[in-house]
Length: 335
Image (cartoon, rainbow, N blue to C red; front, side):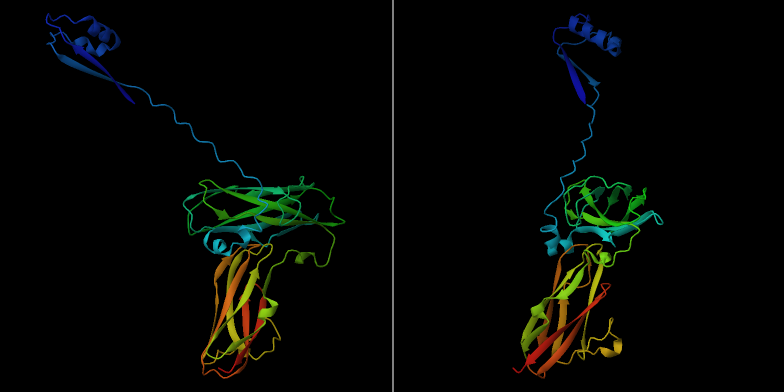
């Protein structure tokens, strides 16, 4: 910052500096070379540099409280799930015991519609998966999330890890499902949907069926397993994908015509046939990245022409990577 001192010598006619200039010389020695008479009305400009005030960095934004409405709001907002940055676990379960005391679960962050920034993470125990109610630390477990901070750019995919280490034999004779909540915070305030849950299966006991807890589903609503369409008209059904825990990944639907016997999965290629002339079947959204516990309804559109022969058409919907396939029976009635 620059400040100025202005010396106006109005009546200096004898060559002797007036008192104000003498004071200036005492303060600014570099003026000592002024030995010539100073004409009247002469103005001397003296500038000096003063230091800029120190820049105090702003404090980081505080962590928000656990979001009790995450499931009912963000994870049901399909439009945002398909366009915003999302994050979630691939697998969602960590198994540890005295024989295998350490485990790792991968977490993916996919950035979309975001400006360059940093995302921070923290992890803590909760009462149950799909819950934001805190729980006291689970004994005998050491958990970390690595890295705790990721610098991100739009249109990229990043991987982190939830790591757990069992330090006690207290769970050897049992099997305990111990859930943790991972919270994400964006430095620049951009909205993302990246909080998630992971379950630690701690113990050596075998309990049938527990691996199916919080599993995902891909299905047609009951009333949509069969639809009737008049030739020349269009019909729709809703196909719902709910990934469940650890369901983060790419989703692709394949549609084909089959005989009607769903005898194995995946369906052998020789069982599939192209759709007949006069019948077009599509589904949207398709080919998207889903995240765990999200809600992804897709609309299957059946478009027919007046010349399509009446009858029953069995449409097979296969979800790549989800291990599921579903049949929809389309009744075409005469125009």
